[in-house]
Length: 103
Image (cartoon, rainbow, N blue to C red; front, top):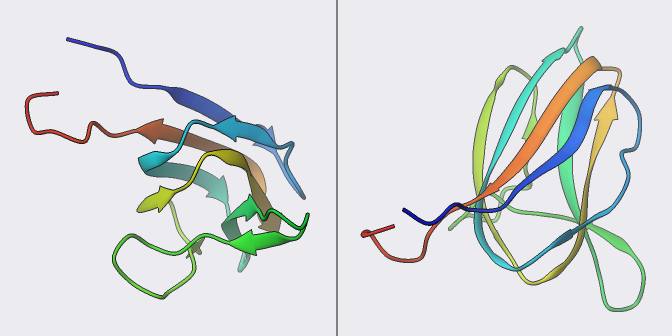
């Protein structure tokens, strides 16, 4: 079975994460953290250089987790990052999802 890309967006971190190149397509964001009333959001760099929120797949709701969990997303190729507000000890990973059921 072909392996899908996995990007370690933040490991035991906080604040604004580094940007990593997303190849484009569907993905799953996995996050666990000490939230303490905070959140972890996924962002994508626009063509004009602004960081924009990435929406939950098939919705218009921006991804902003407030508890350990996952979020499905679809994003064009380009830099992505996570931003942790208040949350600490953040572990966030983006994993590619195959476009076909066969994997």
